Image 1: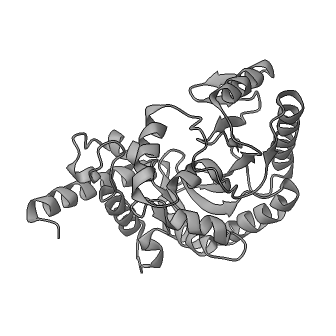
Image 2: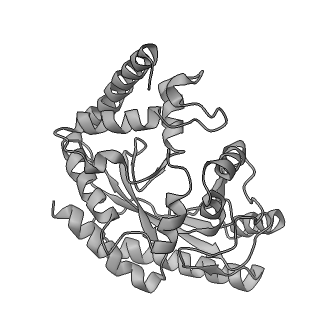
Length: 310
């Protein structure tokens, strides 16, 4: 049971962070525009090594992509990044609803880039949600963030390392155009997360359910009756305050750096099925397994139509 002093700390932080989230949303209220986005991951056909990663980085630069922090950016605004098992991740630029041309360009870029990687580097990227036996594969990203996450997931559950190195998903984003639509969008994404069209495959669900209970799964507030965006934000903030910070193994409310900036970074280390990201700001649906591109268009149409018809 939480002590009285700890409850005071949590209440104070929750009130402060909720207010700061709302302030950001109020600034864009009435001026934002609804757009959508895609993060599309693919699994390598074999274990990857750091040498493989070096070859991939060099290849992307040679194709004309610009290195930007840990990502590569195309002239059209498509971002390419990698996950801890060497999974490749393509992120679209913002797309308007039913932007067929923008979607075609993004999917064509993926197809062409994966084909070039296969032909020139002999690395085959596959659209599937899970590759068994990857828990002991090399860690292909060595930044402190991923080393700390790797260390934690070795201990918190039974399948966390498989999640890091042996799964691939498609994250679907919707930009929040104003605070008044936040609760409606969140509820719809919660419904989608468990729907036949977008829920995880049983194999991937089993992995995520045994990764880290503090930072994975359907957010508890998906199943609560909430009356306002403020209530939703406060519930999401309190959920994150109780989750351990990577490297400290203490809940956020007991850590040394309790700044809003530190909290926003902490939020990016939570991997719930539906996630609120103040950058954008966006809501993310994170449940869909990676699937072949020729099956994706139908999913995208359902996703966008469902939100446009709210």
